[in-house]
Image (spheres, rainbow, N blue to C red):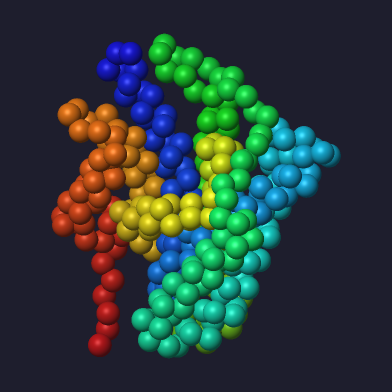
Length: 304
């Protein structure tokens, strides 16, 4: 392969990887933006989404098959189910803690993460599950670069979800209420906005996007496991910080940038691909040294 072919191939790989990070990072940044919670259970929500999609696909494969129709229905149903799970977690675990010190709600998030992690581990006996789909490996070639139709569709689906979210945030009443609550919750209550309902909608959307990413990861990698949420949760959080946590465009940009850094990190001369995470986090540290708020983050002024 020529250097140009390698660059194009890693560009494609980075966009696919970054798509997963972006969808999960959106949930982190939406929740942080509205209630200032670092929801460390979000990676496990992604993992639960993958398993719910896997179970639904297994149930429906006899009716819809294991190709795009079955995968699409499984992903949509998984997004709905896990969206309601996110609302349930918010209602039981987070809402009673909203007025508590930030450290208390942070520990609650870690507890929720451990509960989901161990619950799925027990239900699956700690085994890998093969996410069997009949999509094949057909695709298109551009010189030495080869992209499967699966890769193209996954990136396209991510783009559709991001555009839909962007329109929802900017064009709907709930989206405008989310932005207003992120600025001043008390003023929103005085204006008659149902703050708790808007927060619940935020959790529903963030959890649904994580579930979509989980199903896509299952289709792409071919297997899922109960600890898959930890690593991607950490990296999606990194992507949210890189883009500017609290900024939705920042989460999208941060996720894609992180995916590209990882993909190109595997091609650094004289060191192995296992150093790609070191390379990526070194870039993150440098970025935060020169721009502590992230690429699209803004400095917040606290009034005393």
